Length: 488
Image 1 (cartoon, rainbow, N blue to C red):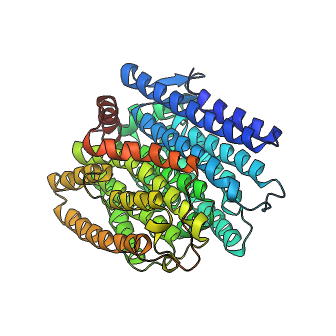
Image 2 (image 1 turned 90 degrees about the horizontal axis):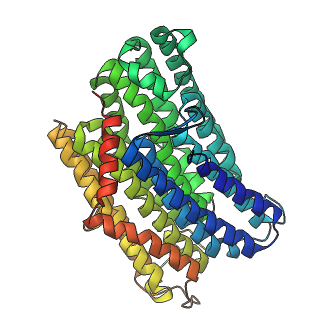
């Protein structure tokens, strides 16, 4: 019965924030709820590791090892984001599209966004999962438009329109898989639950499942930021408040990828490995290629991080497409690694935005003199984000690429390595220009808010630890998840 607590905790926190007019109360409640989610998510992961899948309310809620990995991604980033929000949002505008009480509105929508995201990995029913993914758009659209500028309103509108088109295509896939299930099980014995479909995946009609996977890949791939359906992502991530950008980039994209994986596992059972892998690999490599083009010529550091997310989602997709235990393991680990690194980088550039009041890369210089702590975090995060040793992303990206070579995908792996080398040079060139040199005239050194510094510390810890050592519990959990994704 522990799964529903993942939804109850942010619900109660949101109600308290709605009823309270005190900033300190809202800050404290948000941090405590983030900590409670982290503890609850960890307990669920341990239960699944020790006793197998867990369920509640007659299997309405259901979580297996793959769900547990995604739950960990959500709760870790939710915890660090709750801390960062406490230090960051107090400096924001006093009136937004939410009216004269923007902080209250922000926190209520923030917790609603968390509820929608947490519902995705614990939904047994693929239709409910679709509804939860759609709910994340509704919950986050106002957050993207929070500041009420022309750019933010345009970004929110673009996000809603493109996201809705994508989710409509995913709905077609959901309807078709329901149709395939009826033919395999009979109408009276069928409820669209993963636990019902997974055991009979090999009996699903192959012709229908080809269409199912195409609709699911393009539909949820739009939400995941796979190119060429990624066009909403740079605008939304650039205009949203920084904590929301961290959740969008670090968590929401992984959730859409999780939805694809559920359909991928069914497609593999019904069609074999070749068809779904080739499609997923094509979208993955193309996403990395498109991201490379935009990263090497970028003027806005938040948009730079957004295109980096397109790159990393492409890398993860390629890992699953390569197949095999090693590449799949690396892709699952990369989901967690990317989430913590990308959230850290958004925290760093958020502090830059507070100090320089500009998102233009050309306007930022001498950060090392203005805020040595932020500069250090930006350097470490930049190396981690580009997959450099000894950071966590290096481990998972090497596993993906090595797994690609092992499974006979050497050409794709070599292309990816070449693109990653270009990204490494271009990305770190921007970091160098922002960190070093002389600050602009009138830019004085300033101290970093303690809450923001704490968010830096909690985000850096897993980045450094996972670069040297994957805890045995996490290792075993991911290995179990590999079997769910890479079913025979």
